[in-house]
Image (cartoon, rainbow, N blue to C red; front, side, top):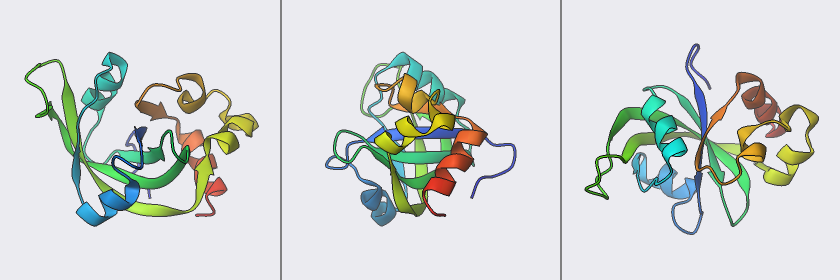
Length: 140
């Protein structure tokens, strides 16, 4: 599921705006509209083949799928401001069991995860150990 030596990230989307099912249907999308410098820097650091957790924010509040980076950062076409970047992502698979924010917060090994510490950041890093724990929790 995860390429050796690659980084792991978490991206957030409101499911009523663009859900993981939408990504599955579309097979690929540009991850546009990020307007936070920390999240932008994470997009800039993504490489082809990096693994992404797909998180439904606001509605559901759960990690629902796994995606991958298929095109590295480039100028976000939704703005003329050169400061903003996007990447292209493609789905890998839907998780058998969604892992809710509540599940993550209550797990002792995930208490320092960016999802808990940096709740508003829309593009976050994920440690290998956190990824493995969430995969276990999702019954994969």
